[in-house]
View 1 (spheres, rainbow over the protein chains, first blue to last red):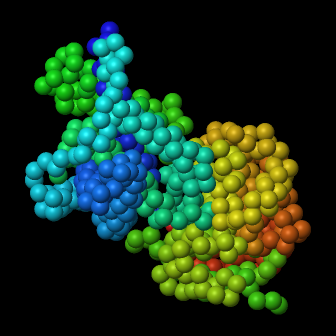
View 2: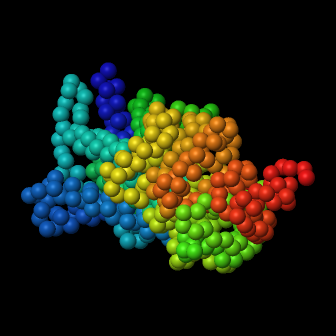
View 3: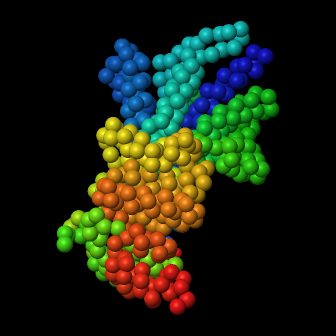
Length: 303
Length: 241
Ligand SMILES: Nc1ncnc2c1ncn2[C@@H]1O[C@H](COP(=O)(O)OP(=O)(O)OP(=O)(O)O)[C@@H](O)[C@H]1O
Ligand SMILES: [Mg+2]
């Protein structure tokens, strides 16, 4: 039983991270029907920018005196950096293709993904870059179940971001404009909504969430690498499809499910196949219920 | 006569190779109701979409309150008092009735006035008030049409473009909608450019009318004159002779 609970906690932690990344896919898809294959790169860029900023603060000597302030500041600055990066990518790679075929934008997204990933490799090198994991050490035990403080931080931050996003999208004026743009771009411009602005904002928010996940993954696994965006990116995409692409609640649920399945699959079936489970789910969903679990009928939480 | 609030000067628009407008010229003066009638595919909706900045203008000019609005992005126009109830209503299906109305006032800042206008449209359309929380897409066709008009009123337009507001509605509803058109025009001096299939109704409501045929204006006159013109009666009012 303890073993089960332990896996549950690990699964929730990982699932939350997938959920954060999956939201970027789903929101962008919801607003412009594009699968942003470059989205995983914002996660990787976040992982790197986080450690760069942390080392910068360490160099100034602030890390020892104000560790949490430094971590908080690094997260916020990294989210902002990736938000701007994503807006730049949108401006350069997608906006000019807004009226072109969907395939053109998709190819552009693939190209952007390769470009960003290689950019990261050229500037940061091919080797793992260590994270200062010692900053969030320790944990507590309940029976034989170990919960690390880092896991608590990750889950806490994830919940905070998910709740924040839900409020933004479903309770604010901007969120309303975003949903309107997703539903009818011509009508939304007839009611004075600038779709360019909304689209840029959607990219920024998605990338900000992925960036935060990137930092947390850095802490969780102790290091980052230039190609770290690829596999989690695809798993998060699977999560978004599982949840019903375009649907915000769906992406959150899908992320949790993929995380759980991966952890439980590794624990009870085989650790070597852990990366495969997400894809088995993706293929099954596409085969049996292409609209995903929160697909068109159940829904009200599409963007 | 005063200066026109809206003037189209020889406007051309196209969709790819399809030339939809081939030199449309018209004028709308402040406080008027002007009708555009014409057969299916004549270019009526395209004319309104060109005015609203959705369909690009290839040639010619569109003046609103004396200055050109060609090339201006569509989302800037509502704040200038130019607003459209488009063909097919275009209610945001997964936004509530209240949210659809809020969006009509998206460019406006003063909360108190917006609340006041919201109450006003709810009193104009009590059916909407009961359904504030309901999703737009679940409303009946008639209710959606009311919502589309109510949303436009939330914009507080000076010039309202309406594309076939009577389409698909029961006679009682049609009457109600034309009463409202008449009312906002009379009481608030809102200028209205009205596109209608139902030429009879449109010409009765309007002071002047334009007849559009395959992308050009073929006739313009007082609404009454058009209404009694035998050719018009034959072509657009379904009379045999
Ligand atoms: N999005 C589009 N793409 C291509 N052609 C279009 C498009 N919209 C309209 N057209 C064409 O432009 C011409 C004018 O269309 P428009 O919708 O303005 O006509 P209309 O007078 O409003 O007709 P109706 O009374 O049927 O609404 C038609 O020939 C139509 O086929
Ligand atoms: Mg039309």
